[in-house]
Image 1: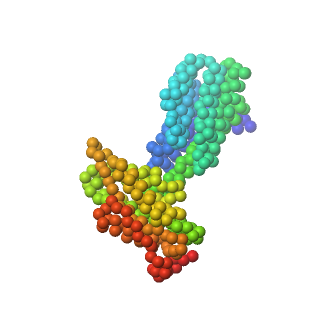
Image 2 (image 1 turned 30 degrees about the horizontal axis):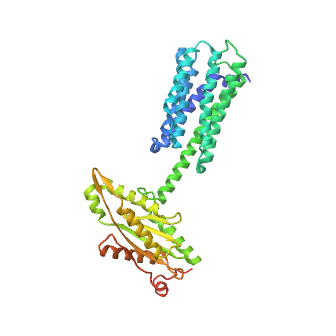
Image 3 (image 1 turned 135 degrees about the vertical axis):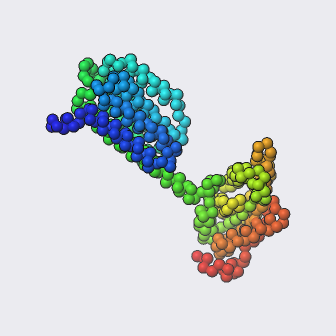
Length: 404
């Protein structure tokens, strides 16, 4: 029992906590080097690095000057909490008042400087201050946990809630039962338990934040696999997959469906004249205009380069032409800017529609819509051309096995 108490003395636990903070900072830095400047990772690593230095200085109490082991040590710990708070806010994409966080750290520095000679006041002050800082981190983790990342947020928040509760009790205990002359490194059962709980919470919070970043990375990978990186609409592969399902649903339910192929006119000339940044801006502007004209269940994807595809479920040819005309009207009323120059652009649109009696597949629909687009280009561009699909008997010959 005596040996266990020696092993678990306050200084030893502080050293272990300091090493744990250092290991967690290094591990996060190494494993997330590619994302170090994203999702609050840099701030999170810096927060634990600051707490490592603070815990190390606390453990050296009596060996180094009190200013270093008390004032500077606790200021670093407070700065670590502030950095961890800022990291979570950055991860969640929320604004963070850095002036407030800096003010809290300055308050910590001044408080410990004033109470340097009073152990009880220091314990009360640090307990309440750190309790509020850890509690604030737990609160934003619980309150702003997105549905897809809820469990990692809650795990990390629970870790900080544990820290907050133990720190509050530590300060309250010192306030109600002041023990003048007791060293900060003295062994008490509660102090040992609270330090061990803090050690566990450090591991838990780092593991939770790691899970948060992994979940975020998984969502981003899924988004990159399905969306076009520039316009953030469906890429070609995703559009084709969804279009196949929509055509099958339309045939199964006997509903009409229309497909529009949209291509920019003389887009290479725009890039050559005004630069690719202007060309990218035009593509984004076009995407925004188109999305404003579409319904929620319409499919919109970048088919390749400056060519786009729009699938309109439960829409006949007349409805598709109406949308195409509306889209061209919106485009003609808009423009992009390249420096001081206004850049206008036009698009050509090819349309085909699938009637409820036709049993064709996506390949045939795409081919006819592409032919309509080619005809619009051939007739002078900035035009809308609609072509009907082949008759059902002919389609069955061209696309065997497409029935259901």
